[in-house]
Image 1: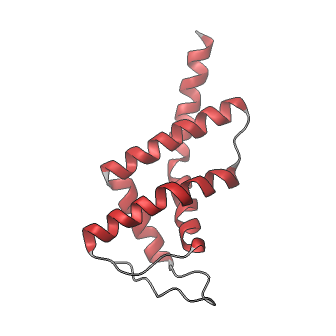
Image 2 (image 1 turned 30 degrees about the vertical axis):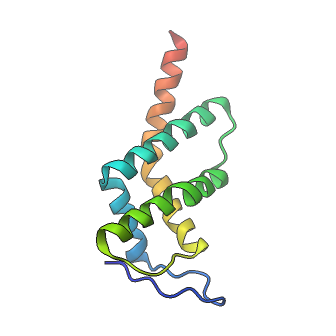
Image 3 (image 1 turned 90 degrees about the vertical axis):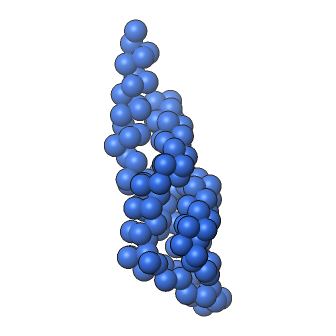
Length: 117
């Protein structure tokens, strides 16, 4: 189970690699959080087709919208206490974006095929 340290002013990142991996696995294996990620993947695919996709903004979007939901659900399910820093949320978001890259590309191909018809 991930261990969260208390957030202090000097500590920027309070998640280790094991905790980041745990949250990523939890998100990918929990139905409700995965469905939320799927919606983001479809949106990012549309942006890639239009040419307006920005990787930095994609990470920021996942970090600010998806990761807090994941953490809230994880805390509820496993009784986790503490907070996750912005840098920690960004690490989890980067991993999740990497995890859904294949889904995004699949959606891009689906959109392009639909346009050809």
